[in-house]
Image 1: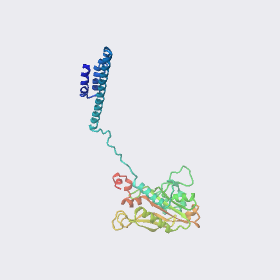
Image 2: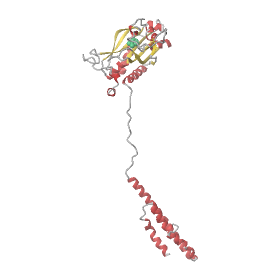
Image 3: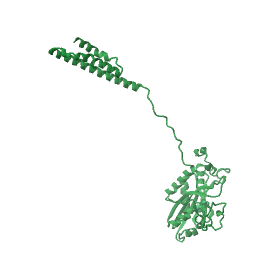
Image 4: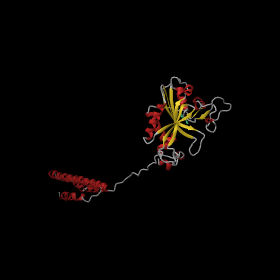
Length: 346
Ligand code: PHE
């Protein structure tokens, strides 16, 4: 009993210096391990006579409970300590700063094209497409170009090489999107209301001309279509795209496939007509953006539409001209040089 009293006295203090799980296990084993002090005393119980054995057994159990309780308190203390250490430590940030990809965007000409299409679609136009290589019949003949028209000359048009001995219509890179007028009327009965965007090709290559450029064609054919509809459509379009600061005008002109024909001008977005030495409009105050007119009756007839019953208007706009106005770019060649410093400034 004395030995047990001594143990009971020491139990609590024995756990106090414990700082780790192995230390905890060692202290616990000192009391209740296989060779622990309490265990050894327990083994000697059979030596005692009955009544004393009972009292001693109870005392032993009390001490065992005390050891277990001290162990639990110690475990708790170790856990709290570990957690406090963890929280107090400098946080570890395993993330790297992100690497930001350089985000590309559409070329101003593409953006312009999409916005132009959107503006016409909002007015009820359908979008039609045609191939960039087409027959000369669709590009010239059906549009009323006389057989010897200079536009067909090798200087102006890229003709595709014919197979040896081939006869019949020649293939070419379309010189304008007006080919889609023909294709549309041949394949659809009126009413027709389409825009046809796309690339066109001409044999020009200088500061103000690129051999490939983009146009958007418009065609409306129905009963009772008049020039006033054309005027209203183009005006609405220009205001939608450029706001009130740009106005438009029509000038009489000539195309083989329209009668009457007009040239569509937009007011100069750079100087508004106030600068006689303006680089953009050359001082005229106006920029030509395209051609238009009432579809020539012969063209209607060539494309299977009855000119007695139907009339129509058509227009062809240069996307690069529209982009010059929108971005106030004085020189068209800037749009084709692909200098990123310039493109990023738009
Ligand atoms: N196709 C003409 C051109 O490229 C433009 C145009 C289209 C004119 C439709 C009138 C009607 O110059």
